[in-house]
Image (tube, rainbow over all chains, first blue to last red; front, side, top):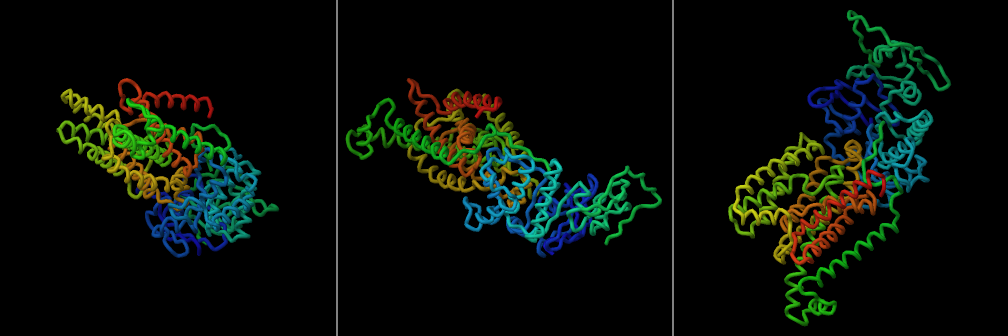
Length: 272
Length: 343
């Protein structure tokens, strides 16, 4: 397993946001974390990417605890596309993507070696950014910027890529373009992917498995067809849905917010 | 996913071409050579080019030897070293803190050094110990600020800046109280030092502090890629394998050593470390692999030029007063251009 979390708890200060999470990502798998606002999706991703230290449990990268590994050693295998991004003005696409080689360079080394240059060229090729190589990142459209930051992550040559809400603020065209690109990387390069997504339909369409989080706990995890059930979605999102079989697979149509569950019958997860 | 653009005085334009960078480097080096020549030839006794060359080869008049080797050259070297150290220190801190208002004195260096100097002058300690005291005051205050800013294994930018402001206020208040209660002679001596001056700086200061500053400057320039990564934000920097605590300690440590060395030589020379990195970013963009060495050269040029101006008039001014007099309008002009989106 390239990435595995065992009995993980994490949050801010002493207050846990997610607790008792057990999850394993298979080689070449795409897993999406789904849940309502405040369910702990982003917090879980931040613990998995070393931004937050776990309050309990471990995150294993190729069987080794990432919080015991050197930061650069982790970053050579695990890349992150965070939710908040800062674009230093004047920085070109090539300069930005070249920074993705940082974990592979000693701290004093300014320039890329031959392997680094080849990896940066590949990252620009995969993300179709070669024509934008010398443009300032700040001058790109939202979708192009997102691809530039994805290229930065790919320049790390990671085995696992974590993306925190990568499609938010992108229009439908750029959402599909980005997710199609990720699917190609997933299938052709064998890249293992974990995404936090708000759009259930996009998550179901592109992911191999969905992990549903509810109030800081892993509610259930499994293939999209098994997770997109009215019961699960009512429990996790408090919504009533209609299910539709479409050319791109099973999709949902939200109908209404659900009635609160009676206290006498608390919801219980059934892990698969 | 939200994308924010880092505030910068630069308008959204294409990054500088390599030709432009080469041109900027040429202009900077030419300016530096001109200032060096003028600094060595101008003064109460003017030297011609031929006299300068003869004195440099230890030929000709003994007075010219003395003027060049014992007075002007060490003072010029001191100005170049102090300016380079302040320019680089300011650029490192502005990059690390992602804040264009950061100066080498932001982390409490000026207040710590100032308080130590006022204490030492008040205690009538030998003048020789004042630079060492200033250096110690600067370094210890920055250490205190770092300790205050550290929470567990993280070091937040906000806490660093607030810690610097808090210690600066506290030590500044104590310094003011001591100054108010000191005799006139001591007050004048302390004030001279607090404004910043290169008057009378000689080989002793250059040989004592210079080598350390050169080593720190080389280390600082080598940290350029680290600064570039930190400019992408904490989350992405962490994702790229950067230890925020270690990087900020390393960059802040080098910046502090540079600023403390400069302070120990020349006192509190303001504005160089604040303005030079701004000007450099306008010239060469925001890649710190260029910003750091250019800020080093730019700082040396600006301070040597300011010192030349300071000793050109009928009465010599402290160089710190000249940098403040010239620096404040330049800074206001930069803000004005930023407000109206110009470069």
